[in-house]
Length: 62
Image 1 (cartoon, one colour):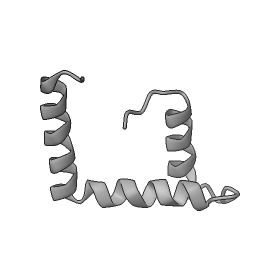
Image 2: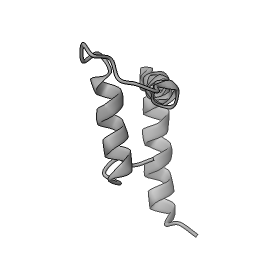
Image 3: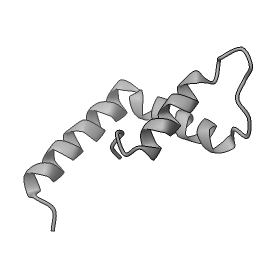
């Protein structure tokens, strides 16, 4: 089982993300990343690409 302290920190972070509206932004970004088949030539898809690289390199955490 995971350390209970980790679970408490995780719960606090997810609660803060939800209350601040960040959870919605993260959800939208993940959805955009899944739906994107090509990147925009004007650079507007930079955030999607950056986050995808972070997730693939295990830098970002779930």
